[in-house]
Amino acid sequence: MNDRLDDLLVRANRLLDRLEAVLPRPLGAPHWEGAIAWRYRKRSSGHGAMEPVRHVASIHLDDLKEIDAQKERIVRNTEQFVAGQPANNVLLTGARGTGKSSLIKACLNEYAARGLRLVEVDKADLVDLPDIVDLVAPRPEKFIVFCDDLSFEEGEAGYKALKSILDGSVAAASPNVLVYATSNRRHLLPEYMKENLTYTHTADGEVHPGEVVEEKISLSERFGLWVSFYPFSQDEYLAITAQWLSSFGVPAASIEAARAESLVWALERGSRSGRVAYQFARDWAGRHAA
Image (cartoon, rainbow, N blue to C red):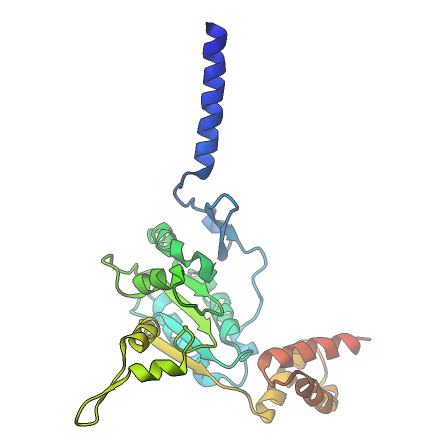
């Protein structure tokens, strides 16, 4: 009888272990003092975890050239946030490789000593955004929830979760959390020509967007600050290339000699973006290191 009871207890414990592995559980707090940035990741079991970023990109505000107007707006908003003043969620949109993500990372490095922290969340995990906000809300630090290269397809679950956190939930927004998102799409959703047919016109000529268009605009409108980035001209591209070459220790005379080659590099890639300038500078500095 005792043997049968012991066997049942062993089997019951195994069953409980399996249930615990699949049942939802609260998001655990990381070691907050061990990092200034974290990534929210889903485990294979479906449980989320905050993983510290051991090596944060060492980019600084002075490294970013030819985007002074955009930099001024983002820095001003971040300064207000860190100082405990009212500040807005931010949507950075526009041409690829123009410094949208780099500007957010540079702000983190600039204000980390004053308590700014960053949590990077992939769009697939935005459904867990309320849990992340609840976790960081009691903390004294200021947290930027960073969503890079954000865009949605029709019906994605993260779209509704992000809308609710930005503005629309019955719960008040946490004063120590802002969302900074980057996207190549201003309205974050694909737009189709047929949607223009849903516009209506009144007798006096006033135009009203249809429900489909309203739904697509509603998410981006919940970001209080929109910052647009534009493709660089040739002169701007060359200035950015020179800055990156200088950061790698290339002397002024050699930077001038690299101009023609940097233009060919951009032509081969079909882009004069800041990312292309940085990639050229790394290649050129590495090849001429001797």
